[in-house]
Image 1 (cartoon, helix red, strand yellow):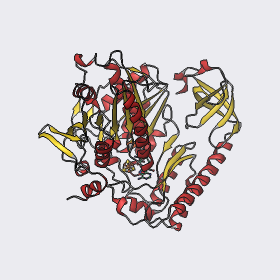
Image 2 (cartoon, helix red, strand yellow):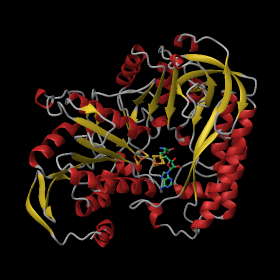
Image 3 (cartoon, helix red, strand yellow):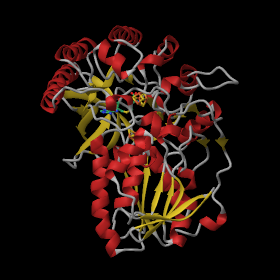
Image 4 (cartoon, helix red, strand yellow):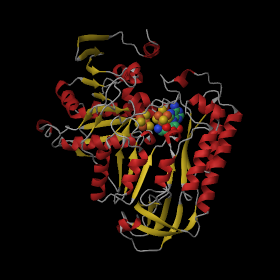
Amino acid sequence: MSKDKKDYSKYFDFSDAKILSEDENGKRIRIRGREINILSEPNHRQEKQRGKQDVQVLYDTALPEEFKTIGLGKFYLVYTFGCQMNEHDSETIKGMLEQMGYKATEDRMEADIILLNTCAIRENAEDKVFGELGHLKHLKTEKPDMLLGVCGCMSQEEGVVKRILSKHGFVDLVFGTHNIHRLPHLIQEALFSKEMVVEVWSKEGDIVENLPKKREGLRGWVNIMYGCDKFCTYCIVPFTRGKERSRRPEDVIAEVRELARQGFKEITLLGQNVNAYGKDFTDITYSFANLMDDIHKIDIPRVRFTTSHPRDFDDHLIEVLAKGGNLVEHIHLPVQSGSSQVLKKMSRKYSRETYLELSRKIKQAIPDVVLTTDFIVGFPGETDEQFEETLSLVREVGYDFAYTYIYSPREGTPAAVMEDNVPMEVKSERLQRLNAAINEHSRKSNDRLLGATVEVLVEGVSKNNDSMLSGRTRSNKLVHFEGSADLIGSFVHVRITDPMTWYIKGDMITEPFAATDAV
Ligand code: SAH
Ligand code: SF4
Ligand code: F3S
């Protein structure tokens, strides 16, 4: 018996599960009175595999006519728990639901279908989803005809799917990250069969083009690649998202042009590791730097990207980013730790020294660049000295912002079985010290902006005060200033009067100017 199976059977009792039928199209089982149609289920071993399956690019994904009436007169609600990639998947899911005739609602009592698009990155992300399922159980009792689905990264995990089958039999639909385009078919199946339908593909992954996307706001996300081959020892993503595969440059560029035409002011190119873009092409030589260079010529005011892995950040890319224009002066460059020994155990494939060298090169080429990052504290066995190296790296690089996390073991990853002798109190204390060091620099960096004039894309009315607007600088700093709501969506100049740690305040000094002038 594989290690994974042994682990899961410890928690879940399938002794009362009865197999009703089984063939090459999957199996139907009954657990505690609930019939479940398992078309395919996640398989951790298959998720690890790389390089054996060809990447298919599917273009012909138009929704057949018979699906376009399924949702007429009905409402949907999608909850998103994960990263930008996950948010963008939700935009695709919403786009497909609307093609099926469903309309959006914020009211769960009104919803005919509720989907939880989940994240598996840390235990607390998963806890939130199971907590939400607990609440939705009551709603399902009141509204048994409502369809409840779980999708996203958690669905790709064997343990999670087993837990849903055995403990959350009120769920109607489980699907993964590789078969989002199958949603209309799965909804139809669940509606008509009244059984729980489970379809999760554990494949290396395809590229599915031309799905509808329901984008909201001024900022558009654009996938440039999917998956991750880095297998950092703590990380679940390579298992939940498949292998690195890049969209064809012509497809990315056509999408960016279309967003420019629709009037989007800012786009963010998405990938788990955008610098690896193009490395999988066998017929052309075309890198992330080439892509950025081509997008630089498109008439869209701001272009961001996330996330870049330090390992693949090459000189050509730095050279292209230094051209400025619509390529903004902000780079999110996750470092995770300042200790080369810890980085080695994490399998990040760079050292403290090479990271520092890279950050120096970037700062030299782009003098007003703002660097932000991610840190994990309390990695198994992290010593006080190694943590001190993280603090000193913070001071040396000078980040304006960082996402900081306490290490969370993820079942099936190599770090989950590493010996961890660091008590939770020590991890929490390290997190606080790290946050304090980052905040100190962030405040200093904001203080330097006092009296400066910055370009702000106005995004909305400030949460706490109706007469205040909020927006972002090119370097992604949050700015609050007084102004009227009709400025939302335009670019203005703001003179900084009150720098704070998390945001800056200022006075608007110009009339709005045309987006294209901002380039
Ligand atoms: N592809 C991106 C990261 C995606 S996950 C990159 O490599 O930079 C976002 C962040 O979550 C990571 O940068 C890391 O800091 C954090 N993270 C990932 N796995 C984690 C775990 N098991 N415990 C705690 N934090 C984790
Ligand atoms: Fe996870 Fe590492 Fe891939 Fe980022 S690069 S998604 S941290 S495995
Ligand atoms: Fe979470 Fe999956 Fe994103 S695990 S961070 S939603 S890729």
